[in-house]
Length: 178
Image 1 (tube, one colour):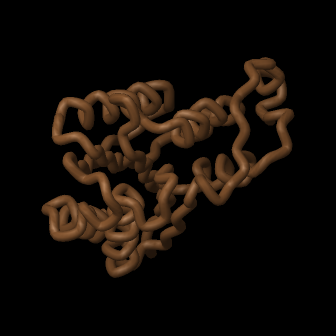
Image 2: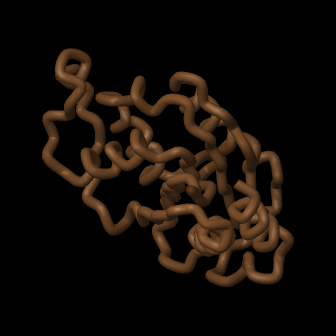
Image 3: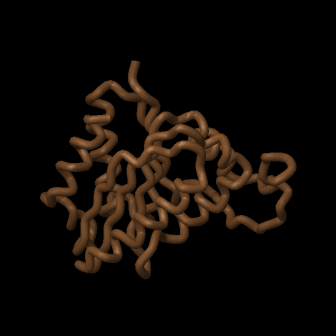
């Protein structure tokens, strides 16, 4: 039986470059027999963490939005793929908001395999690594995370710029190789 793969796409554009790489990853994972679900964060109402601290006691967030469902999926998944475009040398606000909102159950996001997908309009590859370091910092807060791969592409701005790049093949092959 295959693994449960959850892909979290923080692209603000459906069919954007990081989102396209997500789709290739999913295609490969499905062909390998894994159960996949892609959550396009833009389609979900996820509010900012208010820092109220209630979740420290209850392990539930007091906000009633879509994050509880997404967090449940993160806890249940075997594999989590986190994808973001680079904004000002780091992950975008959609992804950072999602990370902040894992606080109620971050201790339950344990023993997961992680893959990170990062794209940037600029050709400076250093911005990709800085963004991946942000993902690694999140994973370091979890119990027994396993980073399995990074897929990145620099110099991709317009929709479809990533098509035909090596990152497309790598995303597909990485998904297939889970």
